[in-house]
Length: 263
Image 1 (cartoon, rainbow, N blue to C red):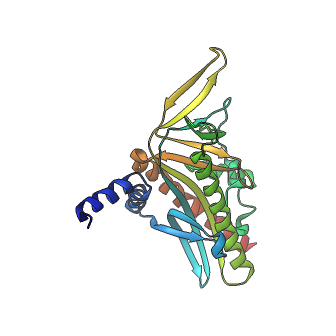
Image 2: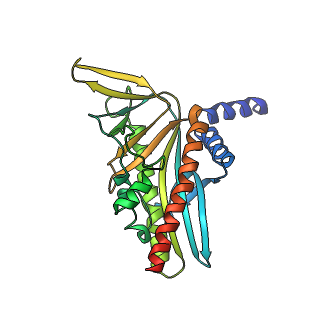
Image 3: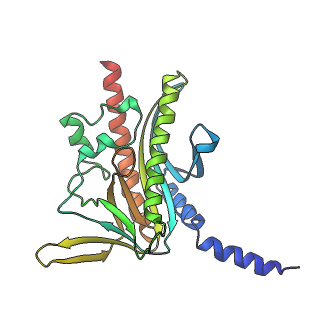
């Protein structure tokens, strides 16, 4: 009969190399800044195509009546890195409030961000302020041959579940089962080395450095979207800004909805 303590230790050591510890610490970090966090959330209407969200953190700016809700949801994929992830930066690419137009959201908010006034307001948020460097890709380092790129897989999952989440609420809204306004902000939380790489044209050489977090304009899904990547050891600093941004986005969303209602 196997020794129970050895089994316990083996399972604990295995879990330390999986995402559970990262999920738990990420959820706790969001709860500390007063966002409602849940682990193991599933999205999708069909059992065969449902996808799991490791952690989701919600800010609900208002319940405007039965079946009516505003929600900012940060969708998190948590990964223990076997190899470093490298974000690839091009020439002077920076974030801009216009990225909000391709951000996953319900169709009730389709026109939000289209006007210069909206964009001026979005520029005040952490997620859509202008001038932050934005990468065009992220890759897993040291892969060989047909090795799976876990960075690509994680980013594609985030893109998919973000769109699926918005689509599901759109179906409820069209079906008359509710009236929900929601914005989805994808985030990868990683335990391991995260690096930024760029090319110095003058020196004809690469610049590579480790960073605490970064932002990628991920174009691998149905349409481009900004996806943030943050190291677990930087999660508390990151969520402080992300939570403040979610609250401000909630206020802007409420103003947009109210203006549409009054029109």
